[in-house]
Image (cartoon, rainbow, N blue to C red; front, top):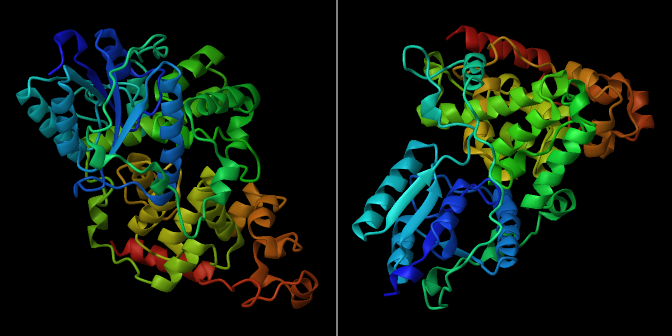
Length: 479
């Protein structure tokens, strides 16, 4: 056992891989005890959702960045793989830890795991300190007048803005660390290289597109506020333009906190249209996490009970065509190929491909949610499910069932020059106008001149858009 002065404080990092605005790290540092900074990849607890492949690639970079930042102050990051319920108490016991610090999690399964770990640690006479560090405010504090929780985002957002959002904390300037012997949990050390795809290595496009890390996330935020936020009301829908913040993977991994974004927007001036609308998008993200906290079935079940009798189509061929960007509908295929190559998709494109899957193909939104969780570098348990239920019409606050995006009109409106389609569906790049958006309706000479052979160089549509829409409306009305 170590002396009382040298007992360490463990900081358990999860989806908060940063040093600034980290209440748990801040509190542990203030204790005066030397720190052990820890991350556990828990793939063995059945109740928890494992990270998808793209998010694992991002995680490797985020862990490396956090470790570099800790090393600048003389510390390091201990990464383990296995059951957190076993490994964290073992680490605390072997190092005679005085305390463990973490941020609250949202889903009831995660909270239940935290409670089990807390009980074990307290039995070992190790203190546990938990704070809210991944949301704007404690979700229990935003209540209706009747003491319940909000089920409409607008009402929730209005209520939340009456609460004081804590100022983001600066990164601790001086930290002391506890030396961890190589023998401690040596069999449970995480091989971080295993987080990257091996054979084949399909993440080349990720590396070209992204650089995970805390400083990089802050640069994205600063660049957006300087160059793009004023034009955000229009730019956020233009799929070929850099009109969005591209902050989502940094928020998902916790390299940037929502409080940092909130504070930066307030400082920038949150009352003009661009910042105000962007702030409302941060509110939607908060509402998704709030809903996950209060309605843990969000990722697993339709929140609208009338959809319990919905008969979704089962078509492995259609689902595969959608996943691979081979539906024969150019704007849909462009979005799906952007996702596969970069681990990210423009928000407007996400709505278009989501509507196409759940309405035109009448395939369960949970299939889309699962694919996105595996292929998005910004995969987020709450956001993914909330947005899929919104676009499918099955959520507590959802787009009406009769709102079915027409892919052609969406492309004409939000990719008017066809630049997005040409970038991601290059086999159609020599087409123009209506033929680019609907090659199946183009004249033979147009297709021949552009080198497009439907069914060979580019697929025919897997569904007639009008027939798919009519089928969806009929299915929804039958509910």
